[in-house]
Length: 180
Image (tube, rainbow, N blue to C red; front, side):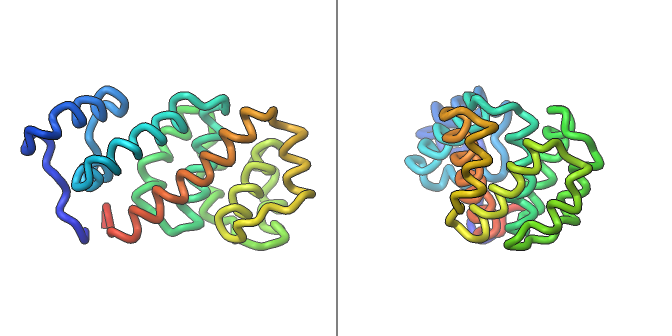
């Protein structure tokens, strides 16, 4: 780790903030202990990520599939290991979770298409969007048109926000070597 995490309960000025994190998450993970070095960032992070995780219109399975795929693409094993059990509890089959590590990133999504039998049509689209947003940034009209056929406006915002937010999470984890 590149930054010393804040041990919960050691900084009285963080008592309320730690209680809020505990209420939302059930614990103060190593990620949040690190974030607490900057209380304003930790607060904003908690607000955004709680909305993405707990107030989204997406199914838990779709959210967790996105999170796991972002973790694979960004080589963030701490995040993958944290979310794999949640994905399984959310109804994502273990074979589908395991397969995420075997899907190569390709602009034309050939590897995703070859793994389609592990996923529903909606999940395949979500994986393609996740790969595109993570590696290419710009999403083409053809792919986005397919997303619009499966997701309403709120779900589209929630989906794009989930991909974007977890790219932020994995990049933060890896830059600061959290969980290494």
